[in-house]
Image (cartoon, rainbow, N blue to C red; front, side):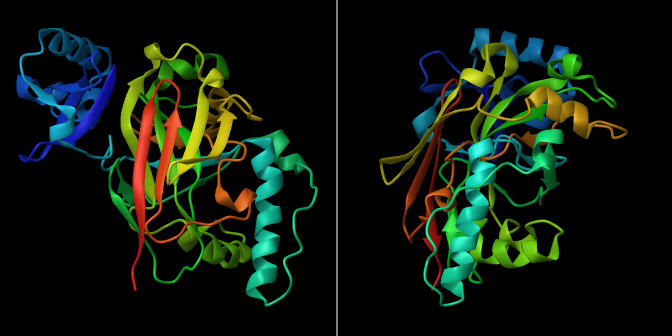
Length: 313
């Protein structure tokens, strides 16, 4: 199923997309507690999914997709973690940062250069925790913070945890996954460059209102036969700027879940980003967003997540 949180004028509702791709079934209208919201559905486990399937089949109350506003599938997730696993991104992003540092210092742009993946990225999944309150959805306008002059997108796929667990083996990790969604990890690159010198993470480089965009919905894991084969495409104002396969990653989602859950409990609704896909951001090409740019992220098997970026004067 493709499960969405939407607002048709009466507040957030849980919906499921019909096969026509143009109609939502309002699951919340059933009155069932486990279908009151996306979080309630995830918390409901197998019983919740069974109820959702039944409501989708009955299609008692439907609404045209074009008539509603899609919200973030999980407007207030319990937690957001984001990893970095794509080898070319791991190599090229720091090169872009060095180029940005030179430009900001008034020095000539040194241009592209070669690099290698640091051993720590090969040894284990590297991740950070970001602001779970700074969430937006498909169609939302993203206002970049006044403190930044270099705004960027990041094309990622994220998993949503569906079952509580700790010390989860990689072989069992998919049993704890509810589904997949697209993640645009908007980034203020000049601020990130400064923050990372403190070696405590990107901080205000990524933590600002609406900086974490998810959507357009969550696709349950049963609909994804092999996430590694999903094609990931980014377009800026209609121009293709990223075209990669998700499977080009150093660590699988199973490995990430096993690593993160070591001595730590994962809870239903938590989001884990798989990291920017290879060539999945402007920094790698040393290109940045401009006022009014439309950013579209398309992932095979999920859909398209679209946002406009606006710079306040």
